[in-house]
Length: 340
Image (cartoon, rainbow, N blue to C red; front, side, top):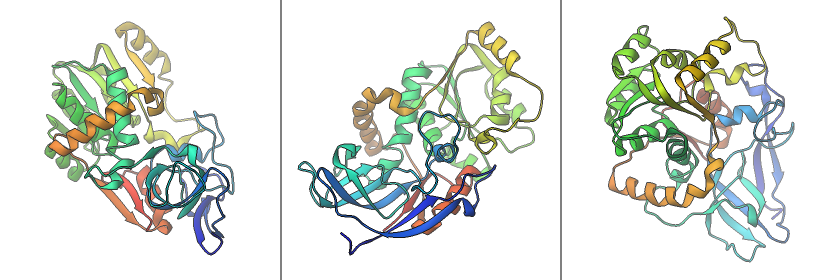
């Protein structure tokens, strides 16, 4: 395969606060010949996700950091273009950890999922019919334990996780309140069927949130943190459940001492007093549910009961800038880089 060139984005340095262009480096290298059991992939779509910010740090996390000089991690929709694996044929479309690059050589056993023709755009395997959608599905089912008639609030509700959370909650008979940043995103939530859609950038956001939940909040699906979480806390009902899959508001402050008083003692007192369930998770904690999720979500999408939006960026060279925008909420929908 030495006649093929792989363009890749590597981690050149670790960020101090917000990531900048100098933290990345673009390289071009030959594509090696696959060894026994390996396949060569041509990556077609790359998913950009908030968790990648944590991979740029050396600090403790649920997964190892990206090493300096290594290719940035990321899931891809890819095509097998050469195979030394008996179970994977040239031309197959797969979901893989192909990373921020145009080509990848991976062990065939590491292929996450074969992609069959479902009638859906293949990029949805990186979004509503993939990891973000499953995060919403599993977090609601296993931690949220949502019941019909309860009130659910979700932040970043125009994003791939939050939008799916709200729509599944509606299918389960809950009252849904979605929170997003900006008027355009707030209006989009109304098209998805949220009972109430709020803009967290509004000066009177906390007042509007209180008015939106006259019976309190039973489930708060957390993927933001910051001032949104502060507005939610006093509105939680006894026995409320809080699935936590992200805290993007503070991702760029890792390791820093945040300003303000120490609120942890008061929060822990509230957890005890109200018997709250607060559980952090990643979607792979619940992999046993994944086959059922794929089946149910495919049907919901085909029936039009779940809608989705993708924000597609053209070209690997634009991935870093798109990633910076993701961390600031500039994307509108699931952020995907089209590589081909």
